[in-house]
Length: 242
Image (cartoon, rainbow, N blue to C red; front, side, top):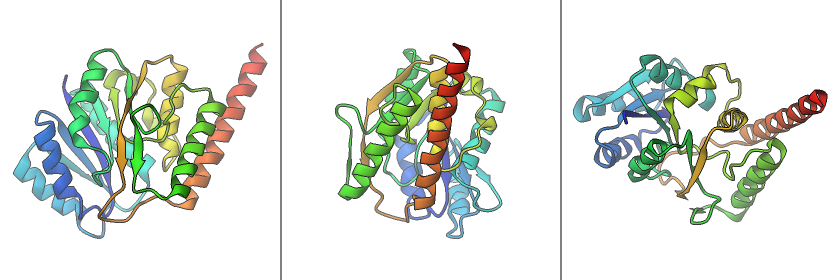
């Protein structure tokens, strides 16, 4: 199956070289689309240099920092419009997601999954190097999301995923509105509403060792407010149909 990794970046100069070289070794037949938001640290030019050296890498340069959701919308639009791919992989550039799992995720899509989630919250999954507060916040947030939205996924905010391209196109990711990690939840919600086959494969999430995390209090608040609004709205619509 023809596959591509869509990789949003912002100030990942300390990680991009290692990441792209590891992907090229782990998944030599997988293309990469780097979506860079004009990183002040020069991530974009560095990625372009590596693209010339390693091949099968394209860099989409965007003018300014516009957010994770916006980067994915532009990246997904680019690869879906090309019509060249069967599987679209999303992941972080900071090596918190192991590129060696890419072929396995692609294989699960080939076996029938519409979405494969690299999950921290199924048996065998977990996190390392996180303070207790962050672990509890993430687990509580995902439990709340799963409950109020009524989705089957235990890890709705994991960014390590593989989508069947036709299933991703069917939910039109360009029509989403969320930014931050709420964008990832919005896609799970839409796929679940279509009774898509969602598979969770356990991963160990390893905290970054270079660069700065993009997580912030504003992102967390936005995510919880949107999830609550979606959940209440979905339940209201179901009641009206009775």
